[in-house]
Image (cartoon, rainbow, N blue to C red; front, side, top):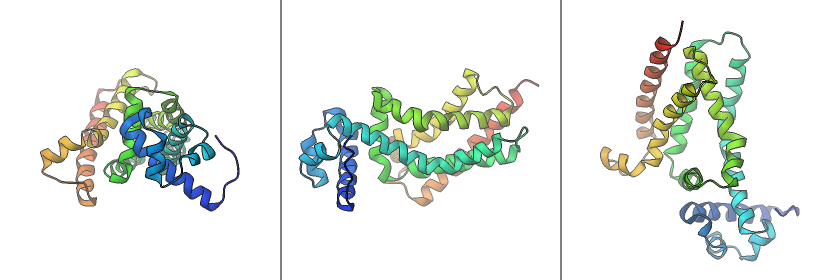
Length: 224
């Protein structure tokens, strides 16, 4: 990636190119053209070479942007989890509340249209992963997934390293992701045209109920 210092105008151009690239890559994957990306960004096609080097480098820059975005939004939850893990016997109610807060943040992000291109990009990478996915996975997805697994294990008494515990965690996350990946199905079934704050709050109420049922059920099933 080009490391030449950029002015505020340059930073604006890079941001516009990243936003356009996320939209184009999300829609067409690596079949997206630099010409279309530059046109959507309102930039000269040479700007891609100048700021990023190549289309592949721009694709990786999009992955890094996503990793930074996720990190920034979930850093408070990760820090709170680390603080809980520092105690030999973390408070179960604090664990439950942290799981709720983290899931609420996910629901809020995944019901905003502004994050749709991000989701399209990651969804493509989930099904046909490239080194771009590995970048996002290593930097933010794996640590956050691990934190949630450890929280679930600490609450229920399960083993955080056990594959079944990881599956339980992933299934819990799947309930939330369904409102983005199955967005159109849900909107049609609910008779909604879009998500808003009130609708996101209703989704969170239901997910919270499910989380509590999962936590209680797994606690009762865990070995004494």
